[in-house]
Image (cartoon, rainbow, N blue to C red; front, top):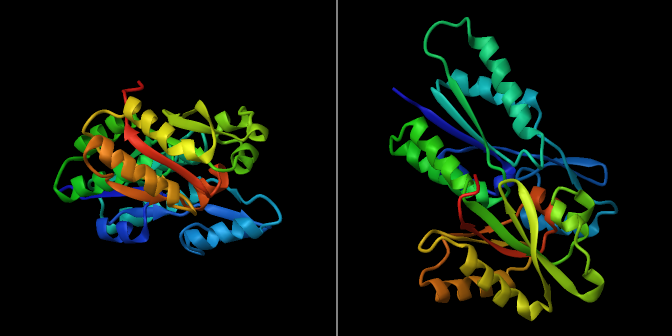
Length: 292
């Protein structure tokens, strides 16, 4: 009898309530603020972290999940009797966590190959993205596991989603994105002195500046037009917010009116995303065209 465990990491921005309800295992990223180490989702709320960022003397930083701590999770799940583990990771273009997970899976295989009985299979999937771009399908995958779908069916769903999914967002300040270097499109953007803000798209592990917006009042109309161009009709979409939900709420209202149905939900970005995009963002996640 199959027993499937879905695991992911905290950059998926899955809430603790969703984690518990769906039985997902969420591994929390290390975050350093002014030389002090914390764990995302464990040591502070999102709002508390936004204030920590404001008061920090240096730019907060994040680091990868190590192969050792991922291996420890695999060992624990093996002891619990899971037959299949599906681990969806943060984008490999922004973190070494994916490659560390592959190393941990290989080490686990070596450790257990001499054991008798059925083997626990480990499936590592690179989301090639951030926040609810993979948090949403991870939750769907957990629901599919509860309904009795096979690992192969769940993996096929996840890969198909990641071939199409994209996030479009406007960072209200670029200092974090430029400093971190993980959102490469932000580093190349020029125009802050002219009062311009970029619309950044991340899809298939690649970030791109789609256009430049002048004036806060133009952000919602521009993003709405962008969503209309990008989204596959009649598919779920998700709103992205940070510290100030005002523009995200306005965009959600506009998209609901335009498309005739509301967003699936609104995700609030956590510490890892905030360190790399800034904590005040407005955006959306959609199923676009297949990328690969």
